[in-house]
Each structure stands twice: as structure tokens, then as C-alpha cells.
Image (tube, rainbow, N blue to C red):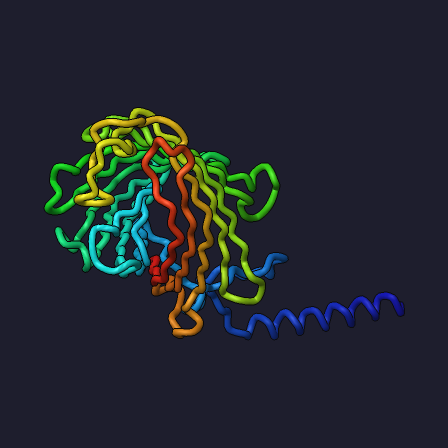
Length: 308
């Protein structure tokens, strides 16, 4: 009898609970039910962290150099005082084409106010493609060399550059030496090859915005009339074309240091608006074989870089 009484009492309680729930209004929601995840939620980039993630990027540099040295030959001995500044502009636009190689185009200009022929000594438009298949970076392109008021020197070349991302082999976060090989063929005026091998390493100074980059390169030329020594008269140093002499062999070497200091924090500029760098350069170049045209020079410069 006690068991039957207990069961009856339990039934009465359950019936009361059911009646109470039946009197409560029903609530419906169209929002999906959220469940706690074991993973941290994705971080939303703040204004100071955002960067240009689009398909087009820009890289601009303006630099004042004591001398204009190109492939071991000094172009700034045409007039004026020694070490008069050469203002150089280099701007590149790059297009990310997804699974296809990146396309880039740009222009380099050297402005030398003391040049008696043309302040715009050289205008160098270029374009090309770059394919990255780690650890190989292959870049091919075409460059036009335009010398205002020295039209007899205008020429063009096609070139290919093979860079090795050696972090793949050293299992490091960043490249160690980034060795590269550049092969350029002058198909117009000089009708020969210029071959350059170089290395570079970026030392990031911890807890600062400084990066120091030692650089070394050496060049070999083959049947390239630009590097002949015979027949030069001295009337227009740096721009003359020799008509005789040797045009093959190891032509010059160059060692130097590039320093980069990022100014975004100092100028209170968000990374989403681009990266601003203060650049410094110091180089020493010298010839290797006396039968080839090259200059011995210690030179440097400072400039501003902007990338977005």
C-alpha cells in the first residue's frame, strides 16, 4: 500500500509540472545555436595591423647617391664636382595573377644636375614576369636603356634571374644568403652577354626597426661591346662606346651594405596605408681584369622607400 501511495504522489507531481509548462508561452528563434569551440576565435586585424592584400602592389624608391655606378662603370664623371649628388627614382607596379606568374613593370631614372648634356642621364623602363616555385624564384624581363641627347647609346636587353630561397634547405624562417644568377643579353647596341652572381643576407636587429643587409656580387661579360676599353677618347666619360679592345672576361666585383629603418612607428602611420622606410647604402666596386672597362669607386647614398 505504501508503494502504491508513493507512485500516486509522484504521478501527481509530474502532472502538475506538465500543466505548468503547458501554460508557459513557446519561444522560437531563427538564429543558429552556438556551441563553444576548442579553437581560439579568428583575430580581426586592427588598423595598425592591416596590410594591402589586393592583387596590385607598389614599390617606390627615391635615393640621393654620391655617384651613379652601373655594372661597375661610373656614369657621373661627365662634369661638375666630384661626388655631386645623383637623384635616382625607381618605381615598380606588380600584379598578382594567382596561379600564373606575377607581372611587373616599372621605370628607373637617374637625374644628375651637373651633366652638361642632359640632367636626365638615363631613363630605364622595364617589364617582366616572376614565377615562384619554392625554393626557386625565376624572373624574366626586358629593359630599355634610354639616354636623352645621347641617342646613339640607346639599347635594349632581355634578361633572366634565378634566385634560390635557401631557407628551404636550412629549414629557417628567412633566407640565409639568397644566392642569385642574372644573365642579360644586349640584343641591340652592344650585342653581348652580362652575367652576374650575388649573395645577400638580412640581419634583423632584435626589438628595433633596423635591418642590415651585406651584399656581394661579381660579374662576367662575354662579347659585350659596352665593356671594351680601347678607343675611348675621354670626351664624354662614362657614356663612350669603344671600337676596339677586349670584351670578354671577369669585369668587376662589388661589396656593400644596405641599411633599412622602418618609419611607420615613428611617423604614426598604420601599416594598412603602406610601409615607409629610410634607406642607407655604402658600396665599394673595383675592376677585375685590366683589359675590361670598370671603375674603382667607394660610394653611398640615402633615400626613402614606400611600398603598398
